[in-house]
Length: 63
Image 1 (cartoon, rainbow, N blue to C red):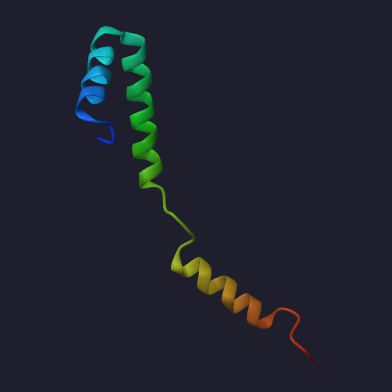
Image 2 (cartoon, one colour):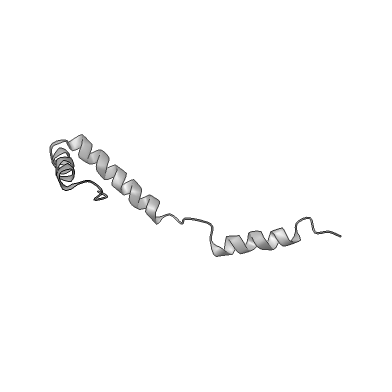
C-alpha cells in the first residue's frame, strides 16, 4: 500500500484484503507491477544521449 489513506480507511482496506481472496490477488499483482515499473530506467542512458547528440552534430551539416 502507499500509506496514503487515513488510518481507519487503511484498516478497512486491510480487512477487505483479508476477506476477499480475489481482491488480495489483484492487489498483489498491482504491487508487483508497480515494483517492475519502479525498476525501469526512467530515460535513455547517457551513452544513448551522447550518440544522439553526436549524430545531430553531423546531420545536415552545411557544406
